[in-house]
Image 1 (cartoon, rainbow, N blue to C red):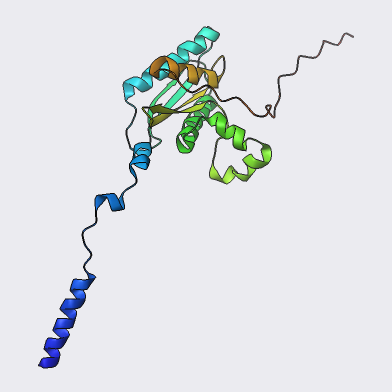
Image 2 (tube, one colour):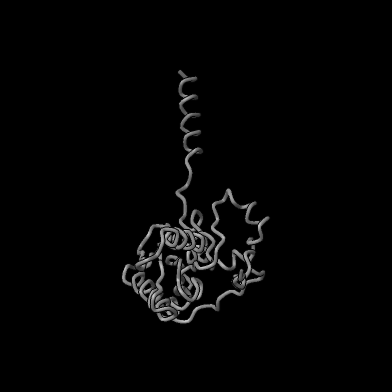
Length: 198
């Protein structure tokens, strides 16, 4: 009987010592700075639509027959709004969507990522990461919080310029467009060869 009482006392003591004090919120969550950066707040539909409309209008100002495809995603990479001008090809949508996701995942304009990893060797090394190394995507940041991202494809006047101008028109001043650090691997278009007479 004494042995049973002893074992019971040991089990109670062990159970008591195994109990963990309730966790404190500040001990198990991100710092205030990390929370501010990662806080989940999504761009609303009205603002996403205004960004797309502004980009398409800017593209048409550069070329009355032009247009653009614009995709705005939320912080979870879900599409909040997408707009495709008449005559845009399917690749323009795919490109705009991938640019928006790239800007979202990297939290930076896609040009800055192209500048970092845009050489053929660096790009090939990162191919398994599914990074779309093409300029024309921007994170959408308001009061230091990223609320989504924007990608542009097929814009007259340039995807990068169109997206940046739309962000400035709808949301106010933005950081300047990141300058390219290397020439395009494709290079400028060659002038047409003179016609050969017979």
